[in-house]
Amino acid sequence: MTSRRNFLKTTGAVTAGIAAASATPASTKESSFTSKYAGPHEMPTNVTLLSMQNTDGSETLGAKLDNDVVLDVRKASQLHHRTDNARGASQRR
Image 1 (tube, rainbow, N blue to C red):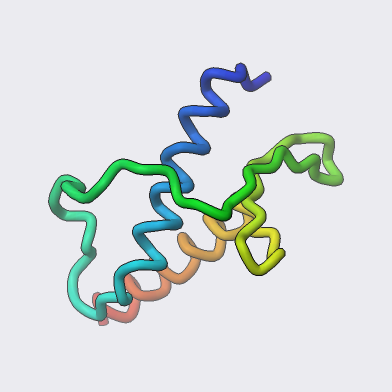
Image 2: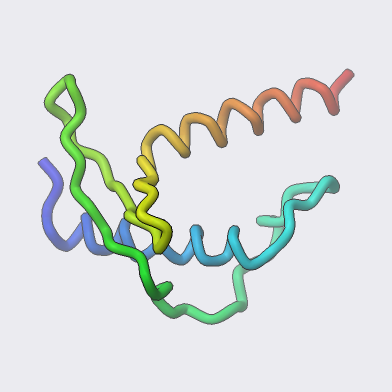
């Protein structure tokens, strides 16, 4: 079970990541996470955080963005890791 404190910590980190990702273009070079983040540590505006219940009964974080699109953080993370793994495999060849 997730505590409210852990949920809020996680949501803060995720929303900061969303804001940083939308403000910077994607890099085709090495991972941009090699150095410590030194940007602003502010919550993005026009984002509503949601607690979403999955079909298996587990809960995940969601974010309703300013254009009324709901971002499922669990699915986005899975897609992100899938593309990272594919990039890593193509770079090793």
